[in-house]
View 1 (tube, rainbow over the protein chains, first blue to last red):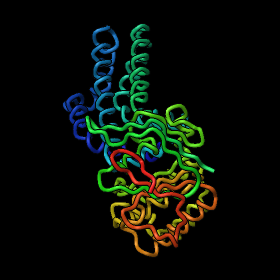
View 2: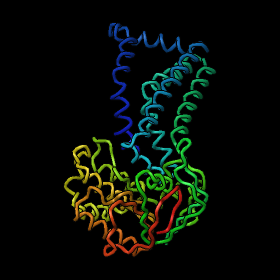
View 3: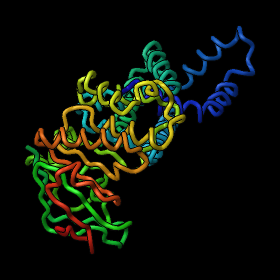
View 4: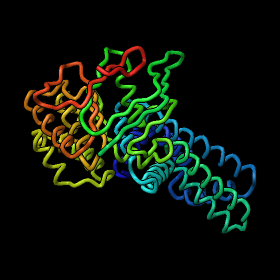
Length: 151
Length: 210
């Protein structure tokens, strides 16, 4: 099932949002000299993980990104072309949950990658509470998306 | 043997009541559901397939849709009147998906594909299919796996005579195995091809026996 979800939802999502993601990436890193990127990325990660406000801002971004992914999936599901997905409701619940989890991990991949980097940086710099909050938020967002999609 | 039971069904779209009846029950065999355009045949099929919300209960062999949705849905196969698929997917990808979900026998699926003369087209993208080929693909998917209740919405439209004969054959095989088949069709069903266990008509939101 997951393979087909990636071929359909995953491929379409990145096709539709490739431009936006490239603009964000360019805005963040495009203007830098290649040698400065590592230091710049490190500075950003430390800044993001060091205060509750920056953690909250990033969590809000994650939440909005998650909503975008959910709206995309629900919109697709409401179209006749995607009515074949209804067949998946006959699969074992465990298999359905696994497939939707896999899909959302793929759709959220860019944001999850940065979030996990923030968690690791927070642990390295002993901001344990911030790392814990960030981890809980990531889990809650992914769980919420699966719950909202899974019928 | 399959038994479908619907109780206290109410289905509304906005303030418009499409279906409202107390009880409807069918056992094994093939049933023809008649009704003009907009009478609620497809809505009834979507309700039975668990694809649209409604008020009331639907059960297949005493397995209730709202209590055991996965068990209930695993016994049902629904072929839409006008099937559509993402045009970049191939027939094989869709068939593999249904085989995986229903834990179906690959050889039986291949045999049905061959009967419908679709085997050479299954690796093509569905975007290249004609409406008849899309219909055949949806019927191949519908008859893949071990199913108790088949719901075939206008199964004879867009397919040629040869494919219709194959469809009659598949339906008869399932009837002999004690399965239940619901068919909606504006075209007359040839009684020489299928023995119908009942004919119903949806009229004024109710199921009437013909």
